[in-house]
Each structure stands twice: as structure tokens, then as C-alpha cells.
Amino acid sequence: METNDLIAKIHAEHATWQHRIVDIKNELKLLNSHLSDFVSRFTPRQVPPHAEHFQNQFILQKEILDIMRHDFKQYENLLEATMEGKNKTEIGDILQMHQKQITRLNDFEKLYQDLKTEFHRFVEQPVQA
Image 1 (cartoon, rainbow, N blue to C red):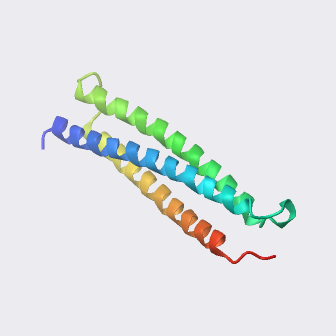
Image 2 (spheres, rainbow, N blue to C red; image 1 turned 135 degrees about the vertical axis):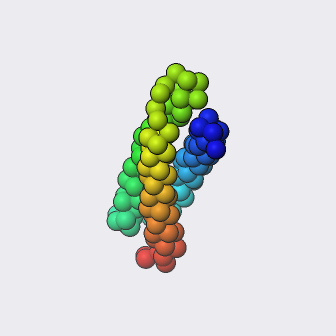
């Protein structure tokens, strides 16, 4: 496969990642809204202690996504510059960076799925009076 074709393929995969980040950020907004609805059923003294944990985790996940989105954009700029001949980054280096980005996104998604599962268990618990 020609180098520019390979870079174009990587670039397309990268665009998919950016869309996935936007989707997760939107999902985090929904989870946060769900948490607010859940907490509103309690008086301030009755709010389950883990509610704050999830609120903090949702904030942290959004911040991580913002950082990843920025880093992915920088990587995308490198790909574009390489395709245009403005950058002489070796294809081996690009593939190595790409693999790191894949691992990073996969690791995030695994932890995020675990958080969602934990959150859904939390809000599905019977409410203690």
C-alpha cells in the first residue's frame, strides 16, 4: 500500500475516533442529567454517598476526553502535513503513534464502560428511606 494511501486510511480512522469522542461527551451529559434526576429524589441528608463520586467521575471523564480530542487533533495535523509533503515523518513513526492512540482510546473506552456499568447499578438500587 502506498504511503499516502495508508496515511489517508489512518486519517479516516482518526475521524471516526473524533466522532466517538463527541458521542461519549454527549452520553456523559445524559448520565450527568440522570444522576441529577436520581439525586433530586432525596433530601440533602439522604443523598447516597456515591452520588458525588459519579459526579466527579463524569467531570473527570469529560476532561480526559477534551485532552484526548486535542491530542488527536494534533496527530491529525501531523497526518495532513505528511500527506501534503510538509512533514517528513517516517511511516513507521506514524504507525507507532497510531497504535499508541488506538491503545489509549481502547483503554479509555474500557474504563468508561466499567464506570457506566457501576453507575447503572448504583441508580438501580432500591431507595432507602
